[in-house]
Image (cartoon, rainbow, N blue to C red; front, side, top):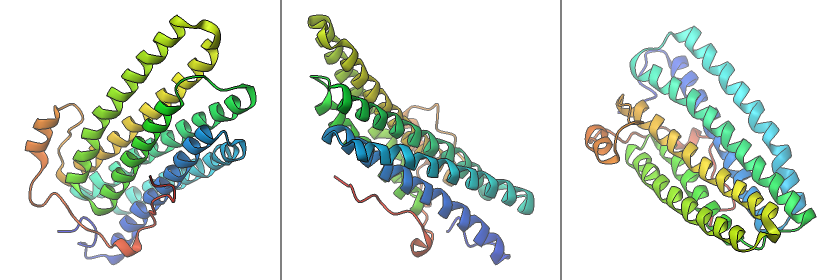
Length: 256
């Protein structure tokens, strides 16, 4: 069973495919910006940070295009059932991608300031580790969406608890450092904000996974425990393929 390609109107199929393609293109842009933002922080690369800041404008513009296309498809096709869930999932996930772009931009701005004004004596290892992890989460979420893969979506949800634990541990360590040595309070707080942005990116990746499960199954899993989610939503038909050759999503070149 495919979520796209089952309608009498081929132009309707194409409208839905275009919508998914544009979302995945936007996701690929955010993924690339996130990779560059983490790299700019770790390598103290101001030019790369500036590239991320400028690149956020393109993500915002693409979100506007996505919103316009959603409105056109809704008005033209008056979708119901699975089609409506798909369109609404794309719309909500597009907002999450835009916010991921915003968080990547915040990280890049912190990287630029740290390079110019001096770095924190602590926190860069944690930022690199967490950054790599959320890059994987976002990549997995986008790949699951490209394949309509509920199992992959559940893996992203499970990974979010890991990034939350990493964030709490790193935050405690840095707050302890501040209490023991107050000379670098401002710089350490900057890194804490970076870690907060990384944690939020993980939450947005989770949101995408939850919306995908709703799209596939019709089950709203946002407020359920993970075990209950799996039991209620996973089934033999929970993974669907669409034409991979037509998808615009490409993983970033900065995979770890």
